[in-house]
Length: 83
Image (cartoon, rainbow, N blue to C red; front, side, top):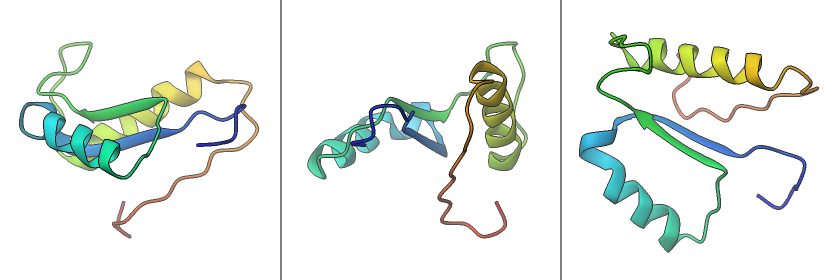
């Protein structure tokens, strides 16, 4: 959060409709700061449906890598080993 040349993203497979408020309260209560907080939408920007959290995260990360082509490093902290 303190590194000014880094993009700090919270990416979760929790649904926007069910968890936005709760997640915002949790982040605020812990004093966390993210550049992006991304919850799984019901429908993606191209109208796609995500069959699983893994598919959603892969699509998001793929778009992120294409957007930040000049990035030299990506660090991912994941609480689910399979993902």
